[in-house]
Image (cartoon, helix red, strand yellow):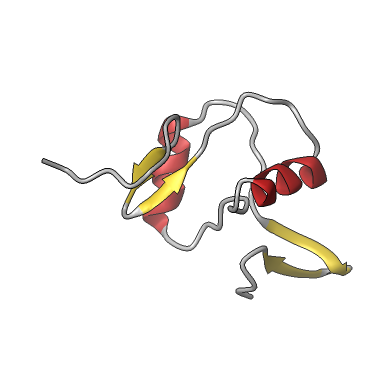
Amino acid sequence: SKEECCPSGWVQFKKRCYLFSNDEMDWDSSANSCTAMGSHLVVMDSADVESFLSNRVKHSYWIGLSDITEEGTWRWVDGTP
């Protein structure tokens, strides 16, 4: 059987856990909520992740890409360029 590593309410995909929240928040609040759970907003690091998300989510959602540190310089919340 498939080994689950995710907390209740989270969805496992390729050894990572994703939480799909219905709470309506702005980007900062969403990012802070993820941080409080020991996580971060999703990083789109592969076509598989993009496909997984687009098949599960039919409404707007936040991703972990921001230019908050330097206007015009976009970085993923996990530090990848």
